[in-house]
Image (cartoon, rainbow, N blue to C red; front, side, top):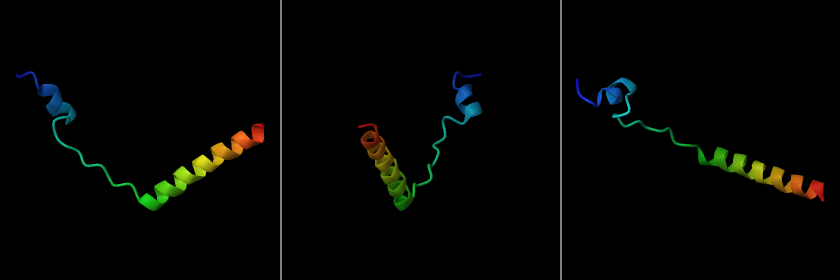
Length: 45
């Protein structure tokens, strides 16, 4: 038994592919979050 058995069990050694993030959805989410932060800061003042 070699020392890299954990990599085979956990599939760490194999490269995984990440699904691409849809840019329009990410922009809307980021923009609405920033607008919420700005609105919250203005509301406190």
